[in-house]
Image 1 (cartoon, rainbow, N blue to C red):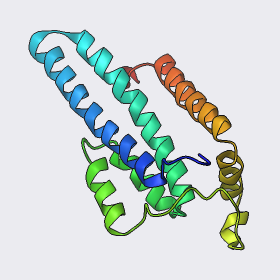
Image 2 (image 1 turned 180 degrees about the horizontal axis):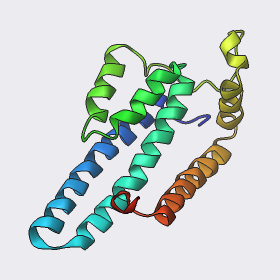
Image 3 (image 1 turned 45 degrees about the horizontal axis):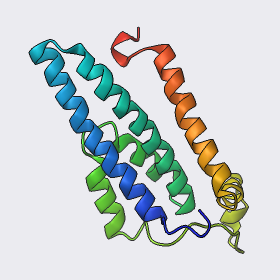
Image 4 (image 1 turned 90 degrees about the horizontal axis):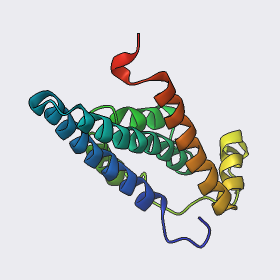
Length: 157
């Protein structure tokens, strides 16, 4: 993300909005499935929503580490994706408290928190944006594939 105009705020916000939008698709898909007997609607909308949900969870982790959020805040950010549209008010909460301000932390400072493993890993990947992008997409696809192999949530027993 070096030289990038995409700030942590812009990246987080775009994915948070996408996550909320895909909730709409999933809810419409459920209405079509149960109201008009069109199960393919949930298959399509649910797959898209699942992909964006995973992307949001990883984004919350990446941005949270960059912004030095406590682990509880990162976990709560991920949890907001479970409730339809909750990522939007949480984004506003972060904005009001200036928790999305600043740029990507590509370089370690004298701050002792920069010596923690996750911060060092963040610096490594932010210095290599192409690698970060490839690893991020690979992680999303690996998690999505694993979830598809396990099966849909309604089929878990």
